[in-house]
Length: 155
Image (cartoon, rainbow, N blue to C red; front, side, top):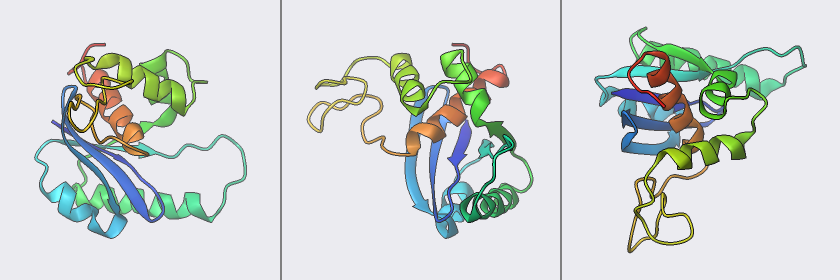
């Protein structure tokens, strides 16, 4: 099992996964992440910030602080996953954007739900990704990438 986090300045997205199976996921206030992490007995992977030589603002530094706090919550046992690794793993290209990553994730799941995007589905006929929204997509990407890197999942 993997507990994957996409950290933010105030709120962070997370996904608890077993292979490609989503067990639970959500977006919570950073202060509440301890409650979510405490229910996990698996590995923890956190999206890590990388420097690309451009100036950054307050939000990046605040996110760095939260990454450190989440690492402490995981009792020091965690793996940093860089966004470029997610893009390379899922899309085969580090220049891919968020829409490409989302599409690559969708392509990994069965089309069992209803509606236009059956991997997500509808309320009456949900798919395996039903309810996934916003930054949870990034957390799922972190979880999949960690499992691929650890040899626990093959794409």
